[in-house]
Length: 347
Image: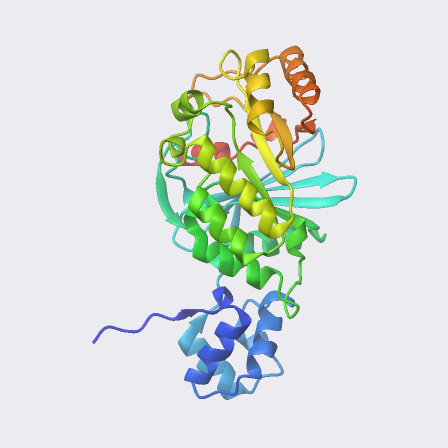
């Protein structure tokens, strides 16, 4: 008879933990105690849970485990203090997170998968394909570990590291519910931004959850022909369907959409591209974040010049679109998604 695997207890929501304890013959009220130990007090072992009886702690040790991750490498920018973490997971895989400092507080960009299968032509994260999705505990531990290491509270989270969050939908949803639980660290989801390359069906599903988070859509092209060249997801979910899903997201949540647009020299940065982008987004409450592209050796793409970026911005503003140019952080420490992981793997 196969041995039953231990429960990943940190990946359980509070109701899920209560139900699991009930199956073990334990009162459901214990769930709040254990949940607080895991997510507010940072317990790494059941033995630390001093207000639980010794028999219960021993039972938990037999039936469950507390996930943890290790900092394999840490780079600190000498320019702006940005910190990039290369984390090692319990199975030997690696992921990245980036801690950034702003005038309004600190934000952490976390990964949601090991690798990515979306195949975007300018992204380092997808070059090795998808290995697996991260568990809720592995997403949470990126935050908990960064906070312990930096000795500071993270004020906001961005799901924009390695992986496509909506391709790991159920685990990401559980992660968000644990993250915002009052019995845990109680981070408001209004301080969370989720970045997607455009899985329209999942955007609609996320909208129906009405979580209150910011949806950030990686657009990077104003036409289907151009977008399909660099983003294979567009062949399944073309722009008309994607924008319609974004309109539904705003209608159901009241949250303005953020569109990410990485400017690639000679590919998507002309005045005509800007005019077409303004027309595409007309009437949609949104914000466009122009990104000076991080160059990845394997792709052959080059970033637009500062002059072309500013020209593109002015053309969008003339078309009635709210625009910002992303502030670059951590440029001296390979802070772009996937770069450190690939360097560590020697590929």
